[in-house]
Length: 299
Image 1 (tube, rainbow, N blue to C red):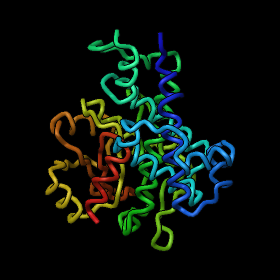
Image 2: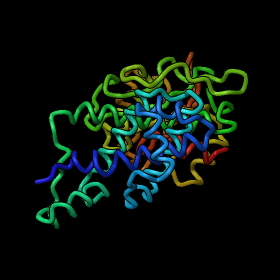
Image 3: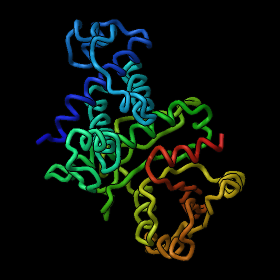
């Protein structure tokens, strides 16, 4: 009998640490600095560098793992990602790779032939809710870092600020939606992110996302940007089906729900302003990085 957790410890962890150590060294960090970040000894980092630690090719060659390692290495190297944040993102990656039919599940099946052909999800534990929250926060962090590295994004930030949010699968209230505390603002032509993502810190962008989901949208994330006719036209050209909703309504969530219900393919919601209400565009996505990618295409 072999547990999936054993595959994570014996196959994933050495490979992941080896890849991350190499990526951090490529970014100019010393062996001791890498050791401190990874929580291992300097001699362990030396072994990673010399190739003395076995690497599982199926994991190392996975494009998601490679992209994740590059993003985490960037964040740790420039100080925009904490060790706790890096751990949360690694946990989220592991949960993805453990899904039935994915790389860690396949390795598990190789080592336990009895599992071949069985669609068994071993991720189902009492910690599922915590892991999902970690996954959502990790997604928002990845999306925020993409925004910070997007040249010209500050020009799309409205006066009220932008927010990038992602919700839990069974989200009902803004407390189930993670976002950036205090929103993202344009500070001298640069997107300023005041703090790490948290749950329950977005009200308006979260409300738009929840209203769209009320109507059956499968979007899990949203990003708001400044309104312009050019932006709407550009998003329409990309097949994102922009639809307008009224800026002023007694029950805004109900109004948005009705609009999306009539336009189920819509991935862009916008309002052109009202008394004391700045015009805004809300781009929906499968997750936070997906919403960011749609906006990056505008620049």
